[in-house]
Image (cartoon, rainbow over all chains, first blue to last red):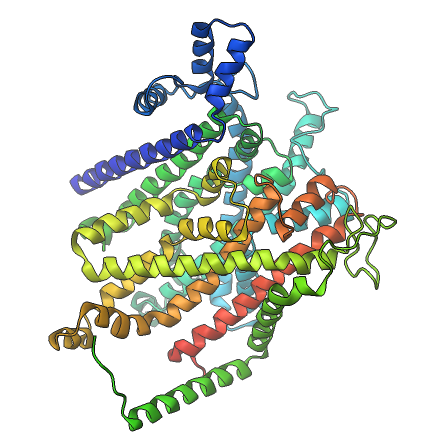
Length: 335
Length: 302
């Protein structure tokens, strides 16, 4: 237990350093944007007849830090704002805080990505076991090759191909958006049906893109376990195949849970291409739109959120690994 | 540095080894025709990148009477929104894509192998610092970072793009090379070299590096695919200004201006660059598979 706690403390400390580094990067980037958006905004407000004081306050509210003072003072201001979870105001959605914009976008990313991840995990694990058992047969080969191909192809190629097939050639699915705009949002069958219809392509793409990795990982994990001595011993003792199979599956799936924890880190930022292609208003699309609209406060916030999720997932995966594999727990420092 | 006067016999032996190596390559290639296909695909792409743009007049001819023309003998993949032949666009755009990929791969390999060797060979404090840094780099998600970076620096030229992708991408190679170095440096032949009082440069360059070269070469090819995906993706998302024609620009214009996901007219315009990406990937995967067997004799099915 003490080892676990010490590990946790180390991870959290390292995670915090990561987050500080990331915020520093986004601060420096926002500051070094050509043409200095802060000064330009301030200038514009003053020209519009605002008093310098009020203008400065307005800019401050917009970006979450004061445009006056040395770089260091601005940095401290920005960081203390973040420490109070104040991400500033969005420019492109006037009068709304960055946190609010991000929160409302997050649900359009988290739910489809989660669905896609779990779908591909289940399919990959089940088919991976099958591919490992039948690895000398034709079907096993086909499964493994399909896995390698899907694993190698970038997400946007899959998304574009699926889009070309299901929205252009055989237009049975909608090309973009979250729901039919003609249907009133609400808890009605028509609206929910439309939601599902619109989510099908993004989820399907995400699941297909992930499936290859899962099937390959599960296959190699099962093959390793099948070669273990305890399986041979079980076979020699004349155990039923179904029971042996349960031994295999249970031991083979363990390492995959760590990968699953890691992949949940992509919950926020994993669908940038898919969201852009299917015009799905999640965090990825928010990030791209904020860049195109020069809304740097929103951009910094989205980047921070996406990165934090990855850092947290990394910590979780490592801890999970310690919990499920006793060898790591007693082993002290990993190599 | 040791002065080297290579005796005749040794030079002859080296030549024999080299000849045997090429014979082995040929044998591995011949066993599976798919590997030959992979090499041919890569050769075609290299030819396309080097000579392709010379085959077409510089501003590509526009046929304003045939916008989004369907595929025909004259235009195998149809035409784009200005009536330019799509095949010509793919061919001329390949130079940018491949040049970037080569620059990226070179930087990835040089920086990654350099840092990995240094950290693994020196160990101690430098190792800890460098690996912490590498871990950090590996944790920050690459695409969002590239997107954010694109607001400050419009890295549109092929060399700049390759530089950015290379500098962001060496983490994995560095980690792998370091762990290989760590295991190799404990082997007898390194100890012997150290016992002989050979310089560190000699040990690293002449004893360690040759053993890892094939592995590094494979990583370079994998870096090429990564670079192609990343740059095409960045241009496709449209966060960088379009200066030169390349596959990502084509995808962007096909989807977001041509409406390829709603009408069939722009579909060939969308599919042509996708097909090019898939073919290039296939070629690289097949060649990496062949290299794996050439350099890893245990995999050879004799």
